[in-house]
Image 1 (tube, helix red, strand yellow):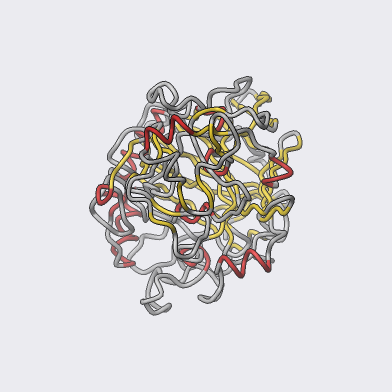
Image 2: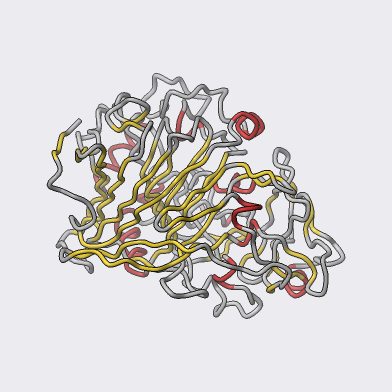
Length: 463
């Protein structure tokens, strides 16, 4: 996810975060069914989703006083991280009324702006293990495929409906950090390859030290601490552009960082690769593959299939390729081919593709430096948590996904153009006003043996 700091553009009358458990609002996870598949068929899994802890109201353990309001900590309750964690309780969520999160059988709808008693912008949820209230579902994607249906027709420029894996702890860090009393049941333990420093509580302590309020987001800021882990962006998309992107890290599992030890875009420092090795069809030279009325028509629902191929076709083999295809209107559509000079024509992410792409675009190859495909595969083998979110971007206006980026380069240079959105698009104030009713719908999630989660007998065509 890039950049994760902008995931927290939301406003509530009582905005705060914590690690204890409050009792003012009952925590009831919205149910969500998904399918575990083998070559013999698929079996329904009765699971649920949980809201990330950073969106929740947190108050004093013995009352209703906010621990954090706007983008500032209450200094009396939170003079330091440990005291804050002891003083502050994290409460249950009104999923539909406050956050615009609803489920129906196998479908999850995330609304962008919800205006009830207060205003909320964006959300992030995790898939819980079937039958569990206290652990996230853990996936090992090696020699498997992950499939889902998605409707991005309501996502314009500047928005991102994302579905991805991160190497979080199954219990949200509860067992590793005794001061975390809330755990996965309340959506704790987030990490990603951006090493986000806007997370309010990390490793059971508050991110109070060095906290600096954001200049552009009245509800966010950054502290000294960040939280890092391997990240596999299966789907970052709106109706204009999409990208599939692995981000490797040199650490195993959720790992806290401090200050300069946290990563920065294009930096060889830190422990994670923020830029990733992305495959965005538009960026790779095919400008007519994905979008309204195009080969993959984002005006209607379609199926996204991502296959994680290993060198020996086993679940213990080395990750060798990440393969993408789509299914729409009864047709299997192969990912577009690379059309960039210096990059061997391919429609898969491989070690060679990543090396060639970075050279062709003049980008620092932090993906390979931080572990590359081997590191990503090792993280898969340890297990990943599924994340689904909708967000706008206070840091870069989502230009890295759907427009020309970075802005100091000419759009004609290889790798700069990523979509048709204007470089003036994506400002959160504009998007939140003009596209308040935007939403993304993820449905029919399936996971299992390669070839088992979609109808491969459908008429196939290549772009």
